[in-house]
Length: 154
Image (cartoon, rainbow, N blue to C red; front, top):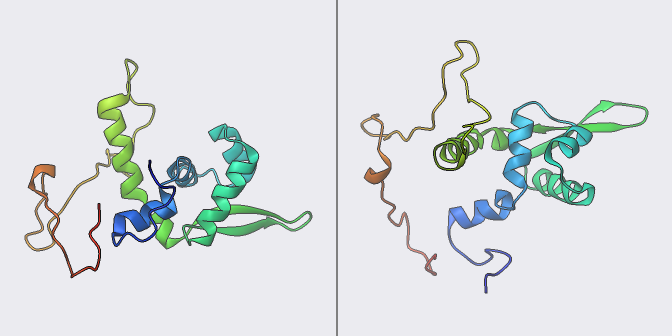
C-alpha cells in the first residue's frame, strides 16, 4: 500500500512532491500562471470543492509557492500571486502540458498553446547541458548520486 507522504525519503523529487504533488496543486499553479488569481475564479475554473481549494491554497502559501496579496480593504479580500519559487514551476507546468498534448489530447488536439509573450512563438520545454550548453535529448540523461546518503531513495 502506498503511504500518504514521502517523509523520510532523501530525494529532492520526493520533497517537491510533498509540496506540489497533490492532484490539484499544479492545476492551481497553472491557473495562477494564466492570470486567475482570485479564490472565486479558481473555484469556477477548476470545479473543485471550496474546502479542498482552501486547503490547497493554504498549503501552497505555507510552502512558499504562492503568496496572499490583498486587493480589497472592505471587506478584506486577497488574491494569490506566485512567488519566485512558484514561477520556477513554469517549465514543469509547460512540460506536463506538452506531454499531455502529445499523448492524451484526443481527437480535437490540445486546448492551449504555450507562447512567448511578444513574438507569440511556441515555447517548448528543453533540457540544456550546463557544460556544453547544447540541447539534451531525454534518452541522453542519467542521474547519479550527488552525495552519500544514509538511505536509498526509491
